[in-house]
Image (cartoon, rainbow, N blue to C red; front, side):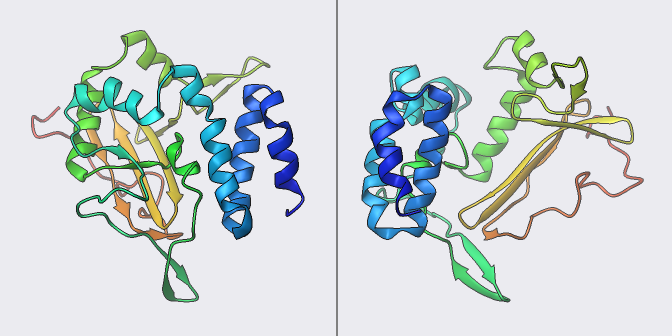
Length: 227
């Protein structure tokens, strides 16, 4: 591993965007385990951040302009190690039955589009409401995002653009879950009933849900209006 980072640093800017992303991600994890490379990993991520190149601005500024402000999400922000964030929760690992602080993660990784946001439960609810109202994208874009991907052999796979597509009791489910730096979260959306379940937990690796359906067998899906 110690010989890998210098090679990444030397070659990354000559590679295509897909390879650059993978090299940046690998460099971030090198920084986790090799302390002497951490500052270099941060500098590399800042210099070769692919999203900022494509959008012409910092990823967090783009989210603020296109998503957070239009939906009234006032607390949502990209992770910052330096900023004072009111009521910031700490993440923990459970190691041999004992709680430990989260592992160090390169700040450059925490400014990319994977596990890199802080927000309150209220802002998460505002985001879900925005999805239900389809406020941010064209209808066709949502349909594409929530449709199974078509593979080269003509078959489909139950995954859209960042959403796993499933069903319980013939009810469609749109879902995503993940764990990162001492936190675990999942979202299960039942779009036909306009119901969403979004548990969060500041402990890794224990998942914050019991099964893919979340709702137990036999549960009748209804809203307050009876729909």
